[in-house]
Length: 236
Image 1: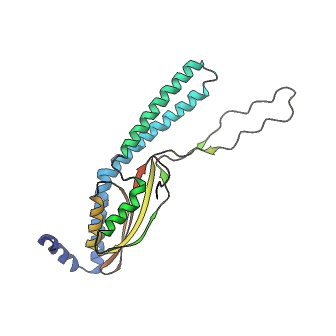
Image 2 (image 1 turned 180 degrees about the vertical axis):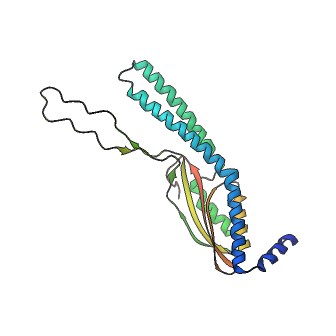
Image 3 (image 1 turned 180 degrees about the horizontal axis):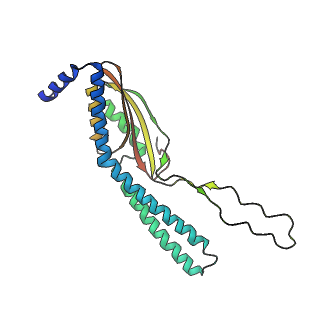
């Protein structure tokens, strides 16, 4: 199938460049695609997710404070406050889950990447693997405040010191990254990237590195990621 004349002219002009010039042009085009994607999709979604996580963290602190106050405050009032804060926290979790709508589920990422690659001519797979899952919310140590109570009169020994601070388990949403390395000509690799972008599912594009191995073959390392409220790579 013949390409449109405009694309053929661009390909001819690209082939006329030196290897160094081709590499520079390829990096510039791929970089522009990544920057456009980050500006239009990634930054707004990530910013909203961080804002919601900040609200979630504040609500979790309120829940902890309400639980600590149960012993000194009237039981009915303390439980009512805890329920109110828990309801607000549940609403935040619903909003966080909705932010990942349209993103590909983690358990389908590898299969979808393989399917698109199998339909793309001129591009070969070098490696494909999952990377460690991370949380959008950084874990913080749980601090113990106050002093240990004094022993009762006549009690033997002393009260043990407070236990060392233990890290709080990270909460969702979680980032599930996949690293894929492919080889092919510039136009074939570009067509593969456009095929990924054209999917009904969406990804976060985090890394896009291009290296010219031998003309006209380029090696491209791509890191794609998605969001999920589940920590594990379910089904992978």
